[in-house]
Each structure stands twice: as C-alpha cells, then as structure tokens.
Image (tube, rainbow, N blue to C red; front, side, top):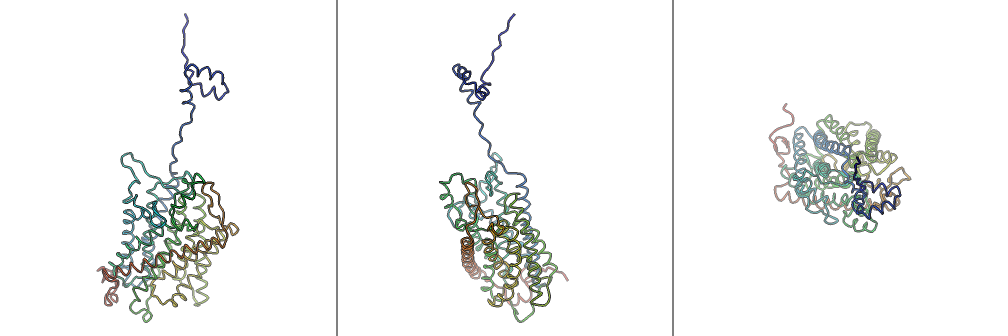
Length: 490
C-alpha cells in the first residue's frame, strides 16, 4: 500500500534563494509559488521606537526635583530673607504663583512655547494638551530628545517644562516682596508669563528634534521652523537665558517701578531666619540636579556631565563667594555662603551639559565673585531696592554663565562642542569669537524682551488694582494686612 504526501514548497522559497538555489526557485516560480514566497521573504516593517523606561523614570524624577525647587525650596530661601511679618506672604506668593503658572502652562503655555508657528511664538495645536493622549486607543504622543530614535512621552516633557515655567515667574517675586499687593502679583504673573517667558522659551528651545533631520537637502527648511535664538546657534542647556536672565531683569524692572520699601536705607531690614534660608538653599542645590541633569532629556552621558558640573560649580561658587566676602568684609557669612550656592547653580545652568570639568571649575569660581559684586557694588550703583537680590544673582549669574558657555564649550578647553550637523550627528565648535558673539546676542535679545514686557505688565497691574499696599499695611506686614494670618503664632 502506497501513500502520496503533498508538500508545500512555498515556505522553503526564501531559504532556497538564500542558498543560491536560483534554478529551483525559478522552477517553483513557474508553478505559481513566487508571489507568496516573495511576500514571505520581504522584511517586516520595524515598529516605531518606544520610550526607554529608564529615560522616562529619570525624567519623572527630574520633574519632581524641579517642583521641589519652588515648593518648598525657593519659598523657604526667600521667606527666610524677609522680616518676620512678611514670611507668610512670601510663602503664599510662591505657592500660588507656582500653581497659577502650572495651570496656564497646560491650558496654552506649552502650545505657545513648544509647537511650530514662527520663530517667535508657537501655535495653538496643543491647547489644553490636546493630542497628547488618545483615550480611544490608549496611545500617547511622543516628543523628541537629543538622540535619534529615542523618543519620550510628550506628557513627561510637558510636565518637566511646566516646572521650569512656574519657578521662573516665582523667581521674580524676590525683587518685589514686602510691599506689593497680592492681586498685582497675580496680574503681573499672567501677563509676563504669556508675553515674555513663552516667546523666549520658544526662541531658545523650540526645534523639530533630531529625527526630523534625515536629509541634508531639508536642513535649511527645518531650521527655518525653529525658534529665532536656536537658529542663531546659541547654547542654553537648562535656562540661563530662558529662566535666569529673563527673571532677573524682570525683577529689576519691578524694583524700579514699585519703588523702595518704607524705611529702606534708613532702617535695618534684616533676614529673620537664616536657618530657613540655608535650608532653602540646600534644597535648591538638591533639586537643581533635576533642573540641569534632567535637561539632557535622557539618562545618559550628557546627564552625567550636567550632574557633576552642577555639583562642582556650586561648591566652587560657595567657596569663592565666602572667601571673597571674608577678604572684603573681614567675616564670612552664612548668607554669603547660601547666596554663593545659588550663584553657582544659576551660572552653570546654561553650561551644564555644554562644558567639561574645567568649565565647571571656572564658571563656579567666577560666579561667586561676580555675583558678590552684583549684590554689593552694582546694587549701590543702580540704587534699586531689589529686595532679595534677584538681579544681582540670577541676571548677573545667568549672563556670566551664558557668555562663559560660549568659551568653555570649546573642545580645546575640555568642552564637548555642539552638534553642527544633525543629519550626520557630527559635533564641532565655530570658534571662540563666533560662539561668544552668538551667546551675547541671545543674552541681549532676552534682556530687551523681558525688560519691555515686565515694564508693561507692571504698569497694567498698577492701572487695574494698584501695585503697592498702603504704608500702614506695609508697616504692619503683609502677612496680616494681605492674608489675615501670620507665619508664626507667638
């Protein structure tokens, strides 16, 4: 008894081709197996890349660290520097403004800062975070990082950048505390955030991302859609221009428009709790690792470089401020050490992932001395009651860091250089003069934008509700007069 077995040769077609069985493959093709076999042999389309869980975990952690920088770190740092009767008002201003800007960021801020429109403002495609999550199929939109095929959930990027926007507006408050109406603070915050922070963030940080750069012929068109300052080639790793110069200059404008505190220059106006200030400064240093290392957007070598630079530069600035103050005044102060830490953190922010270890040493040591002069000599020259020295530390530190980034980015000085060709991924350095000029242009643009917008915003708030509390309320203290409660029940 014999049995005939039918064999389906189609499944062997790719193997026969791979082994050079051209004649047999041709024979099978004549019997109608070619189409099915070719389909089987065709490589499957690779699935799109998905976010790395380590990157996502790091960015969520970084976001929480930056939130810590505002509440409680900045609130405690600022609160300790004012008089007892105004402590709670500072906590209240930081807490509420941080919340206000966080909400506005999700309503329209993120869309205006990080979507395509023109070189100065983004569009409205992400209003209310539209399109970031699809409830119908459970899918999430992706945002690019700084590496090809390395996406990040867009909502993670949204949250991370929200904390940047919120703390930037809170920084301004240090220049105007102890005399401004709470309602004026809120009105100013909305206007300045909308017309200064958002366009500067868009100009400095918006671009199409590395995955868009696939063909050299498309580079010019892609660059043309990016923010104006990004197109110039300015380097700002984590916010020297966007955050610190932006806020510091706005604070100085506010100090001029608002006028000096009652008794300023005639009465002793001392910090009521340097203990609180030291705790706040320490928490700022801790949270700043999320601010700077998180700006790498990945858990990679760039994040590691930003982390150690942030650590080192801050320590250097503490020492340079302390010893310079000791030399000039005869005694080193806790206030000086804490201020030096913030000065170092500010100055290394634009440089964090853009310079090497030599740059961190230099920037930290210089920042301590420069910012010490800013809150002493320069402050006397300009004669403004910048209550908590936001201009002297943040604007001056940010300017110093931004300019020094242009120098220490050079590979010859230990820097990593910057990406010059996003299609090929090659890095380089345009030269000291060229990069320094680019950095200076970015600084100047930021100063002009924020100064003009801040002046207008303060004037609008003054017209609507008035800027200052009455002299009687100021002498009583804003805790009671503005909020009906006090920080200390004694």
